[in-house]
Image (cartoon, rainbow, N blue to C red):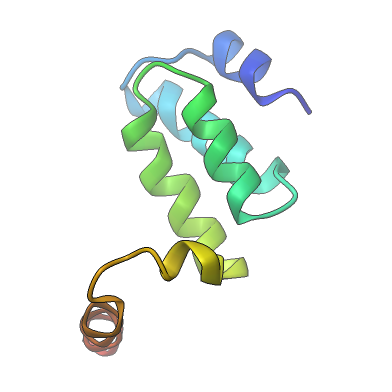
Length: 88
């Protein structure tokens, strides 16, 4: 499915009624984490809010690519903080 076309049809603004369906479309229709994230970015508009949702869903289901994680400074400490958050 063409995510850009869907985003333009549904709307690229911030309201949840527009942003949530576009974020879910990217998360559920992309073949993997990286493709879902890229589609969300390329859809334009308020992509930061949509990216939080799409990235969280794909990260939870597929995991974040190791090559991407390797570029995050202090990844081990952040991973530990996330583990603590999940246990709360």
